[in-house]
Length: 254
Image (cartoon, rainbow, N blue to C red; front, side):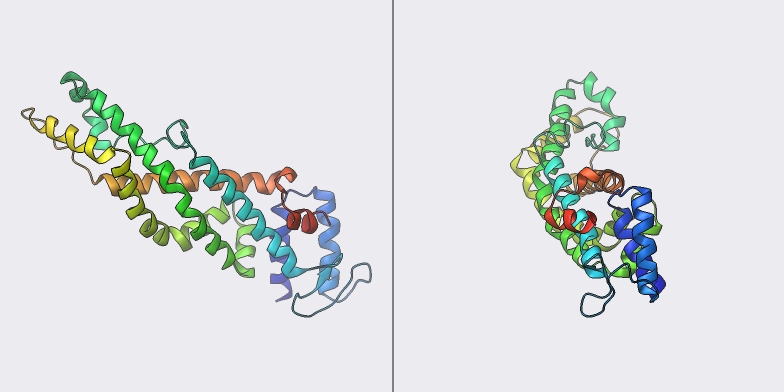
């Protein structure tokens, strides 16, 4: 249990981007305290567990959770803004694959304008739906255990994002799907799609390009969200500037 506790706190500290020298000193003291061997660090027990420089283990793990909440806030604000998807090549949602394959035909028969309009509206739908994801990810962060924190520390730079994928993809999909359906309707994507398909079907001997537009847009919107959660997580691990709230400054300033 002691080893698990040390590993979990290592994860919480390392994710904040502390210098290697400071981190080593901090963890040396923590190791000795947990194993009962140092007077340089305040030892103790209680609801918060052992304390280090006046901070309990639970406070330090709370700092990790707060860092991930701050990252989530940043990402949702970014992708949910106008052109958060549409103007970003990294997560821009293209036309469904079948339509991409038929783009030459669409252009030949004067339908490329409708196709371009549909592509823009798919991205607008994702931008409108993005804010609905924040609360679900917050819940996943709140449910994170010491074991989860240890796994995140020992994993790659996107370990927390992988955790979010594992525990919240299903709920995110179920939440976003009806929202996406409504937003695609509101931004005119569904009517554009229907018009495009109707005109395309009048062309003889063309392949079928029909797609479940809502399912496709939902999946692509979540992929864009996870992409930037991973980017933000990597930054939290390396960049002290990401300590932007009081709890982060208090926990990781020690």
